[in-house]
Length: 281
Image 1 (cartoon, rainbow, N blue to C red):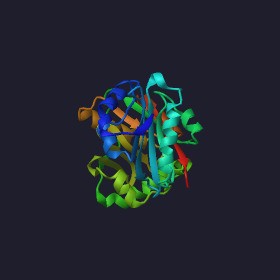
Image 2 (image 1 turned 45 degrees about the horizontal axis):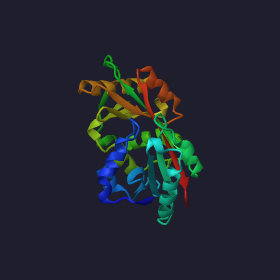
Image 3 (image 1 turned 90 degrees about the vertical axis):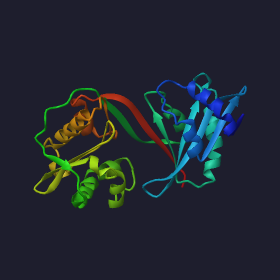
Image 4 (image 1 turned 90 degrees about the horizontal axis):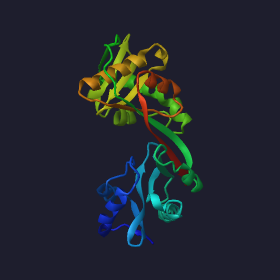
């Protein structure tokens, strides 16, 4: 039986989540209750054996995107529960007239890409995540300083030039990001953004987070000169010196230059996420 999730189902939902495969990164029950635009559960013999929910957002291309998550108890998979949940959820979401239905698939845990292909989705883009657990590097020769707003116009230009082809290849709109988007997504923690200047021009930049390298870019005019490697080593040293013992970094599938650099510096594969989408309008 499929029905809407109710607050009275909370305890059983916790029990369902505890039965899922190790390694799944499921939302907390409270986050699901708070953020899901629609949440449905599949009951069998008074127990929850399946869960599906959708969250609503306006993406960077000003499209209404509904992100779908579907989970089925391991022992009950391949029995039609996931299909039934998807069709029920989709029938509700289509009435909201979204532009895109999307879903994130951890391919190294349980690759459900084939399931979503059958549901009319197609792979959109992929994002491998790597992890580093090594020592610090020797100090780099490249001089990196903390970002200042006097660098804003240059910084926007480097972001646009560095990401345009990658965005276009993966159909991540808008292909040419706006200054407002750079402020929102790349400079939301300016104190953790470092830039390298040559003749007053930004040649490279690295942004660190909480045990993460959040952004690494080199101006196309200066690529192939080793600036990316030195900027990355600088960022990794900053994190290690702040007490982080592990460093994580993500990149877009197909960015072979980035992958080669990260592996050469000691990063190891951790997980891989594929994003699937279904265009509605």
